[in-house]
Image (cartoon, rainbow, N blue to C red; front, top):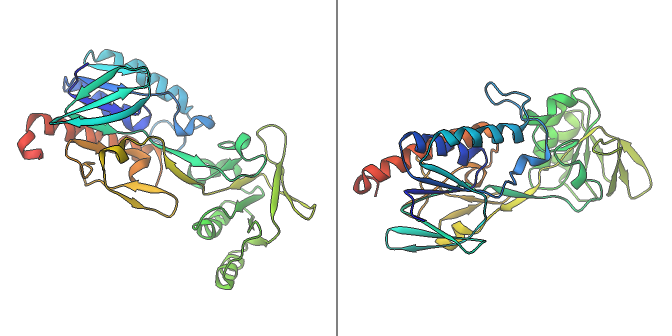
Amino acid sequence: MQYDAIVVGGSFAGLSAAPYLGRARVRVCVLDTNAPRNRFTDHSHVLFGHDGSDPATMLDTMRRQLAAYPSVQLVEEAAVDVVQERDTFVVHLADGRAVTGPQLLLAFGITDILPDLPGVAERWGRSVIHCPYCHGYEFTDRNLGVLASSPLSVHQAQLIPEWGPTTFFTDGQAFEQDAIEALMARGVLVERERAVGLEGDGPLLSAVRLADGRSVPIDALYIGPRYRFSGDLAERLGCATEAGPMGPVLKVDEMKATSVPGVFAVGDVTRMGHTVTFACAEGVMAALAIHRALVFPKVAA
């Protein structure tokens, strides 16, 4: 089917763009597999007016509200390929169908690559967390841990004592003495033994189990997981990326345009700071830019 714009990804960034385009009476197709990155948690924090809300409920509400705009269509299907034919993008879906349009918004998000440590996956988003601003307040003054899992783990461990007593688990890795001293200056305990598993009932965490048989009491464990794009459409189109310390980032300008004309990108794929607020704001900006490109194609080019 032919549309004016195709949005690949129906989480906070994509669904923030869709109503702006719908209110401009732009024919929009939103493609989504209903697997947002924050589906593992029950609460979203520090979004204006929605502190503590269930993110799944928020997304369901937005999908229902989009029904007020007849030019917006939600399609629950994965985009598996894209080609550009002159001024039109042809997006192929997993079910064999194809949708086309002159403007494309990439909002497919990222997928976290969790450490291969028993107990992490089932507690991810509950008691194994990554952002103190999003999830840390609920664990204030509890026993907190940071697992060395990325180049930014030391920085993370220096920050977390703001919320409570913190242990940095080096997981058997070697760190510069300056880094260790900086942590100790912040009151962080440094545990050099390798971690072999997590303990606790259900999604709750009670301790980190070490290779020497000890268990260190911990109520919440912070990790900074590396990530990958949740789709390869940007790569297929040749959009410029840059390497970040945790994973790739799509290069966009202030209007969220990528290096490929007609292709915009928003949300976690475009920045290191990953919050719902950023995602929503970027979706709005991209929607305005896409409408401008449709009305003034020569100026936008």
